[in-house]
Length: 137
Image 1 (tube, rainbow, N blue to C red):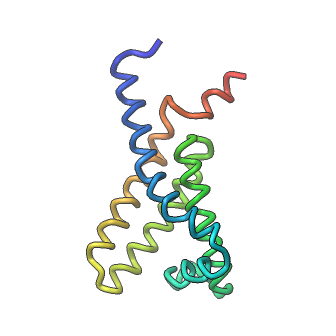
Image 2 (cartoon, one colour):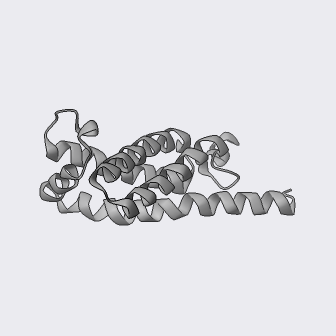
């Protein structure tokens, strides 16, 4: 059914999806469970462009939910392109904020995650995704 080259391509795309997803879940999930204090701490780290005047606690909750749902989307491949678009915007904003703060290493890290998410918008989830199983039914 799959040629060897197709299988290698799909495994490569799956690995590209899993890498950022594990990091996002490792960061976001514990903070979501800890409650309002952790949400507020995450909201304080947001660039001012993203908070849009809402309370810091709710901005942090929105950020953490976006990261957790984006990670689950990357793992499953379901709604992946939409969440990759949101994650690309988020990482571009982080890149800008870190650059303005003079944190070059974090700027490069955010730029790398931006480029991975931006590239996944165009490639799609590959062959290993829940979406393919749902289309067959």
